[in-house]
Image (cartoon, rainbow, N blue to C red; front, side, top):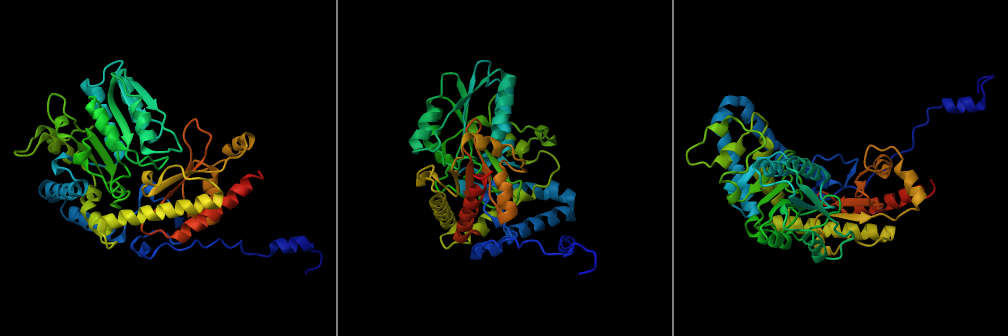
Length: 437
């Protein structure tokens, strides 16, 4: 030790390495098909999806085609590409391809419908839009804006959570329909609570009462095996293909039943391009207007057929096998976490698809208030800790006006059971830390 240097100063000057970060368990054998960072345990497919390498390569080829001769692409090749994607998607959804409009996301589609209702006179002062407290916040924002402009009222049906049965959810929603209800928004799979809603019964009863139904199916295609748009009979249905179909980001659709495509007030896109004044022989005005709404990169939508083929080939049973594998893995992950944390499932197995939300063990009210004040880049600071300390990407949140905190897991083919065991231990550790704060 140099003369005169305090021992503590010398100790501080030694460049000790920081504590080693934990190494998360690997995903499944199929994880090689994705470009996900192996240093992160990615259990949040439900938020933005994740696109396989093969599908990304297909999108790159479409972009190269577009950039090699942009004028030819948009004038001569565009229509055949959008129709090919429509036909593939329609076969997957069991509907007429001519009833599908390309969309960048489901929120945009919801806004398209509610704005049309407000502008067309379908909503008058005193009319009602029915929704519920499990709906996606962005969609509720669009409902409120359209209702305010039309002088209509938003009716929010409280749906129990935990939810004991599909009928409990359906009864809660249907009991709030009135003679003034003109439109109802219902998720097929709820984003915050991860419930597969009984849309078949809700749509049947509301449509039978003359109420138009708008189903936000953002998570359903590629997750819910019973999805059949023709049989469902909703006025409108929208979903993101970039979630469970695993197409590139920005690929979604809006289904509009034929009776809303025609007449004095047909459903029209929020933006009208030059095509609106140039109807094409043999092509409906609905297709003409929705196909193209200005210069943009449509390659994500054009790549939907590649995603359907790619994902379907990853399981021996094709898409039914994909959905069953993800459902089984989700339930197994849920059961591991519930046992580790001493909590109970929030819904019966039949109301769970490939995402599942659980209610975390509660703290006393004073501690809960203190914890809620912690800074966070996410909805809850526990998510920051889980990501920073354990390298797990998984969402934590809650419902408005409710004290409970939620943990939502996703299950995709690239995930493994060991990843949920690792998450369960990490959450238990962080909850124990919180109990001492």
